[in-house]
Image (cartoon, rainbow, N blue to C red; front, side, top):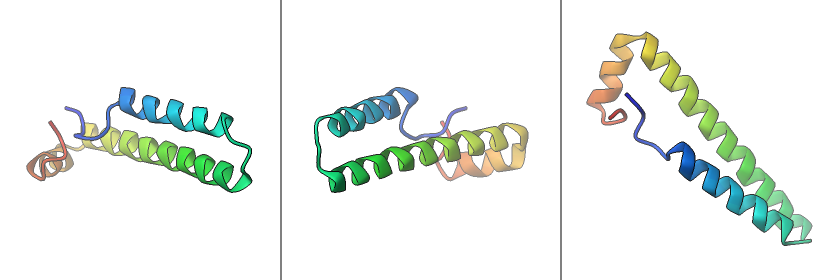
Length: 72
């Protein structure tokens, strides 16, 4: 079962778009915001991966997440 979240492909697309925008600007404030967005995307992906791992080893957690619609 997988979480109903952005797919790895979508996350990678967003990451690519953010990096491209980062390369196309010299504005330090924009650089800061884009780098922050990239970091938040990494945190999001890491959190989802950890929750997925926890759910795979805990049947009760997996069932509760499924009941809430977080798993497909």
